[in-house]
Image (cartoon, rainbow, N blue to C red):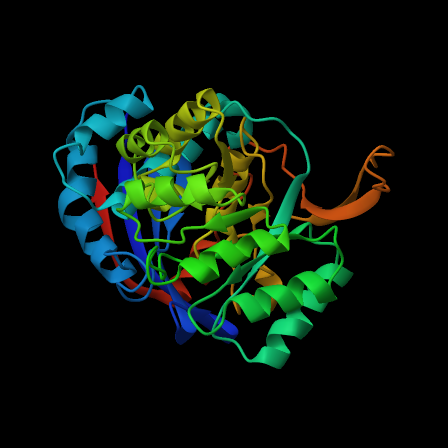
Length: 387
């Protein structure tokens, strides 16, 4: 594949209502979008490490510069990109900057699928099936808003909710959620590495009381041994999130048996290909996956949905209500529908409808932005064209 043009955009997408990210309120979402063109066909990628380096060491402004000055020139200088392995090799000497790499890699994946005239989920080896989805509730919202949000999630038949907790907003709130809402609602608790094994042992052990699907990133992301020790002492499965930035991280985690699940985000892992490598290794080790979502537009979510359609993604996919959150969405949001899940008489579990997103039949990610509309939100951009 010969790349004829490579464009990058730093966009500022206004939100209809403030959102909470890393205990900060934001009224806009900065995202980085890449357009890769070959023989008149365009592929699109999007990443959103955040407006500031609060949840990761990267942020959208820095990602845009790394993409513009380091990664994009290397990609365009390469004569041909016959495979994703060749693409990854072009920027392999650039350390870190996973989100910048993922922006290019996801654009290449979309372009490649369009040239094959196949949906991206199919090219990745996925299955066309309804994807169960779940919502996340931040630890910083008001208590009334928190519980009304949980009730709405139940009313709209979301399969799972994830509760972000912190010291002082932990056992009591999880207990309320478990007691006051239906037993069919799957609960995950996300700690974002905020607890310490010695200091918060009582809080960690109490999580066994609430029939959680998993306890996500309870301890320091780089402390695999502490997670392994915790895993041996509680029944609730441990899910690693921020800990898993690469296949090498996953190998360490699985070798010490630190988790039962991993949350995979293409931006943090450097792209869809690395995410699939991690998922395949996890499957061989009996570790399940779920697709986690950084706050970004429906363009990025389509890449995530394609990943979630592949093997070993066994928990509901992260989701946001795009039409309620963004004043402008880069591409149409995927349709959500209610799909019946069969019951189980032995477990006294009746059939129930759950909210799912539907995959698409069109090539690539099935949609592309309107450049005229998108230009209204551009903060900065670059363009490289092959002579």
